[in-house]
Image (cartoon, rainbow, N blue to C red; front, side, top):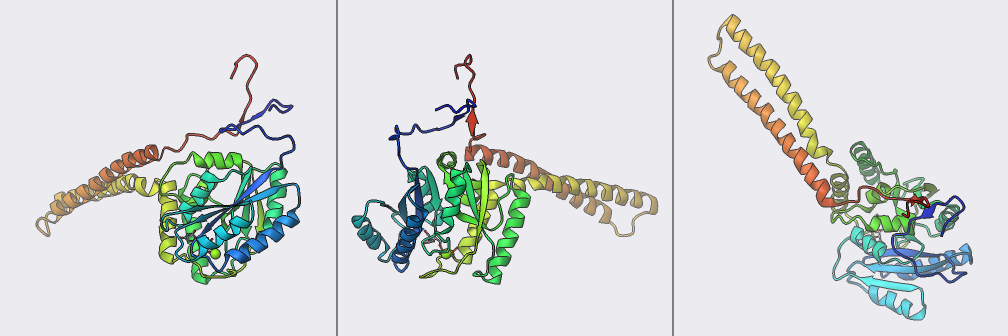
Amino acid sequence: MKSAAGIVPLDLEPREAPAPARLPRVTLVVPVYNEEASIAIFLQKVDETTAEIGPSVCFDILFVNDGSRDKTERLILAEAAQRDDISLISFSRNFGKEAALTAGLHHATGDAVIPLDVDLQDPPEVMAEMIRRWQGGAKLVNARRSRRDADTWLKKATANTFYRLFNALAEQPIPRDVGDFRLMDREVVQAIRQLGERSRCNKALFSWVGFETEEVTYERPPRAAGESQWSYWKLTKLALDAIFSSSTVPLRIWTYVGMMMALVSLAYSAFLFLRTLIFGIDVPGYASTVILILIFGGLNMFALGIIGEYVGRIYTEVRQRPLYVVRAHHASEKSGL
Ligand code: UDP
Ligand code: MG
């Protein structure tokens, strides 16, 4: 498929030959964990919204059951028996939302994918605008929360600190107040599938891959039913995963701290040494003891920094992220590429 400009869209997995008038399909990826109270409300709302979005796209829903211990799985299977657009992947135990979302991205088959919370905190009606932007050429459409009224002050404050810290440290910043709710074109999903790291924060990966990104805003409503399964403990773990897997700065900063310390120690040692030479000894052993402590302290820190540099590089290698993500390429007649 070559457009007039000769740009060939990169498709890493060959598509099946599409039927001439095949509708673009959007897969909704829905992680669920003990959500028996939400399934029916969710499906009803999604059906209403997709009917309104109209006939230019079709939808399918991929539930990822993250080891629920209640009736969630049975309810979804009962719904799936009635219709042809519901799929379900069930985990053997609770692996957490990041794992559930990742499984969803690995198995989604649509031309675009939208991860969606089952509690309707990601309002399905926002999808209409996302899909319009996608049809207008955007590959990634982020949904930004315009207000966080539904959140407690503690959650707002911790979220704020997280965004600041992350964006100061990571090579690719993540947009504030954009959750997992977003539309990703198939190309973006393919790129994310190449990121094989184990400790992952999907939000950070979504922005790492790049592509033409647009944004829509929405107001985040409170949970429709059931209770949030996130604890501050889980959120802290996620925040640390995000920071440590997107940045080696915390590890390598010690090289600079060590260098500074070594320099300052050296200067102070020289001062003590000269003072002792010129003015004599007031406390016996003070100068030599302090000089030894300072010099070895500085050297220790510096050596830790050097180890940090190596560990940081090992970490980057082990993570095996692709070096780059290609969006399109143009091949000349001669090159035969
Ligand atoms: N979820 C999950 N596994 C978990 C925790 C949550 O799959 O271990 C799902 C949950 O069912 C919901 C979504 O992730 O669809 C968001 O969870 P929740 O509403 O509890 O998070 P919050 O909105 O409070 O951030
Ligand atoms: Mg929620």
